[in-house]
Image (spheres, rainbow over the protein chains, first blue to last red):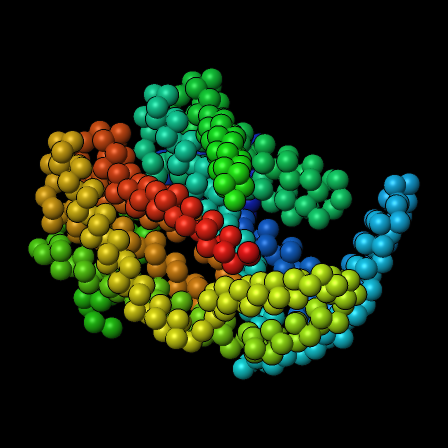
Length: 261
Length: 240
């Protein structure tokens, strides 16, 4: 009996197989992408993951497209009032007459503003308000893949720079092609809105992405494991140091401005 | 479609995805400077058209801001917070001054058909200036470092490096933030300079690419720092 062909039968199945092998850190996908480097394919992978990631948020926001804007306002105000009430309950032990007066003031102000909110959402635009809501919804969704693309390109060039400084000898395109696989675990961020578990899964996705970056560096730059790990982590160390320096500098400038005012 | 335009579109598409052969072709053109101007202007017009449509759509879906301003002010004046604050004699004057200032700043960034049409003109112009600055400075630095490419080759190849700016055409969807274009352009410029000055090592190419990129940023930072005392004085005067 003939054995079943090992080659997946459709591009979708081939893509899924590639993603699965990359996620389980099998060397084959990294070698394959690096051997036939194509930025087109790398960008397609990143944009597809970004679109899927944004789709979850887009679907959640979908009912808002058809809901009456006045109902949206009422829902937002109800949410605000609920937050205010829970803050009031949470701070019951430290409640002073001044604090209680501030809460009352906020409460009354929101109530007084309610009819104006309703008037604001009814202010006309040249095109029907649905067009604005739809284009905003579409813009939010389509921005996700580009945000992911920017993140991937930004971090990848720093990792490649450190890999080269540590003795790496691979090309730009083979590395970008292989490192595009590092965005796949970021799909876990789609579960972000789930309380607690969402944050955990997002963190797992980020760490998994770094491990895939390591694999891409090791495969395409011919570096030892230790150097590949250093190339992936050093950009983050650099960002941390620069971030601290900028914060210190910012505080210094603010303090000087306030002193001179 | 005319053959020349079709070939240009194909070249830009390959340049977008950093195909080294596309940069070699752009550098090897008979008249790379003229070809470069053509490429950059075409890319700028396409991107500008997207930004024009996006700007018009954003304006057409924005509510009448004069009405929003009036309703918001009326609403704020109706709140218990405003009643509590107005006992201070200076409050009303300061509140209205700051409200006006806030709206003036907001109106500057509000969608406007005039600004949208301006993008159609400014985008190709911005890309042309950026290309001329980058190409000439990067070429000068590359030559100083021992690069063997000619100025024509550098200008031809770096014009193609404007290809990622084509993504700005997606600005036709209001609210769509096309992030990553700057980084992508930087990578394309690296490939362009590397292909033309092929005798340089990668750190030398990186230096040639980063110097014209960093100089405007440094100048902007110095300008911002120098203007800080002026801004502090201006804000101090406004809130006095």
